[in-house]
Length: 448
Ligand SMILES: NC(=O)c1ccc[n+]([C@@H]2O[C@H](COP(=O)([O-])OP(=O)(O)OC[C@H]3O[C@@H](n4cnc5c(N)ncnc54)[C@H](O)[C@@H]3O)[C@@H](O)[C@H]2O)c1
Image 1 (cartoon, helix red, strand yellow):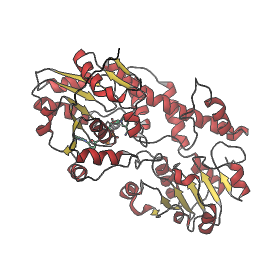
Image 2 (cartoon, rainbow, N blue to C red):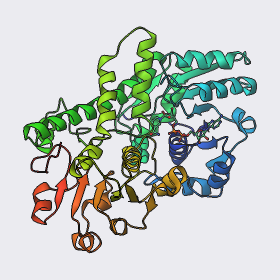
Image 3 (tube, rainbow, N blue to C red):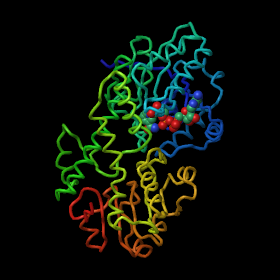
Image 4 (cartoon, rainbow, N blue to C red):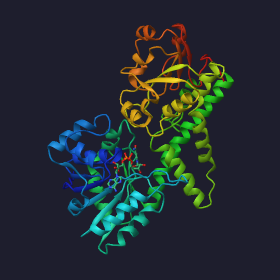
């Protein structure tokens, strides 16, 4: 006999409308919930309310516009006017590294204190920000300073990846929920039911384990990347090919195929800050997290590995050289440039007297806002090549993968490529007459 449970839509408030908050709010509205997204950035709220999406994320705009039109999704800066309409309140606030590398909780705890002044009845407050173990207790205390009524604080870390965030949210591998409250557990199960219909699990646990799960996941993935970057270094020194080694180990289920690509290090708004925060959290309880400290060190060096190859090619002097740079975002399919390896490369090259013309399909505006005219920007990846001594590839956007090489040659007779993402086959590039320098591969002219 089949049984059907009929779930009612919920009224939700999402506080913080950045990459996580906007995806969360939009995807919750897509299954029929009534969602109000709150942000202190009034310009952002005005844009979103007018139907202008504020981040680039594949597939997001379409469902954002649909739910905005259906009035299931709206935006405000006035938390007080909406908070008591909600059954569940999500915190999707920044947790940037503080001066010592530990996650700075001022946004999360500031909003929690504000909530305490506003709440009028039972609510579930769900923390989606990535936060150190014990934060749920701190949020509870901050709310309880001013509010004596009933409420629950739940940890619900977000595992979405920028670039595939909508898909990750709509069909998550798993949903992790940290709570010991049966009432909150029931509400959270109902809310996530439409997203786990294919049998992907909702894993319930206590708040502390849930908070640590998020850091453990990101740190493990960062470790996988750094491990492969060290294997790539060995390949270069031993005459092996990292692509072969990757395929050889990735086909083992125990290892898995993903996050095994060597390159120019991990970046983004999560891995660097989360690895750093977990190291600091471990220090606080007098635990020396040796593997993660090594992961950080390897990544810092890897971000500049391509620059070292470039300098080695020019015998240490790149002053006056002009480079085309393909890719600025920390990974493809996003406009996010936080901790992007491309920025470390730019800084290092400019410091040595080189000049750069860059192209990125989505991230150029953000780089213009932070670097201004320190570099030039081209309207296409082909035009970026004009007058360049060499091409540097820093992000593996699909449009860079199968370029028109005849067109490239027209703009770029020097035929010298430093590829930090191993986009092309070494043998093919050599047969076309390129000097093609990539990461950890055979015959790719290992300079250092
Ligand atoms: N970006 C990701 O891929 C990702 C994935 C998983 C988890 N996370 C975690 O989620 C959290 C949010 O990350 P993000 O990338 O969405 O950050 P973000 O910087 O893109 O967005 C944060 C938003 O919060 C707003 N804000 C700040 N203070 C506020 C306040 N007092 N009231 C209302 N709004 C306020 C900001 O204006 C901004 O729009 C972080 O803890 C991050 O580590 C991020």
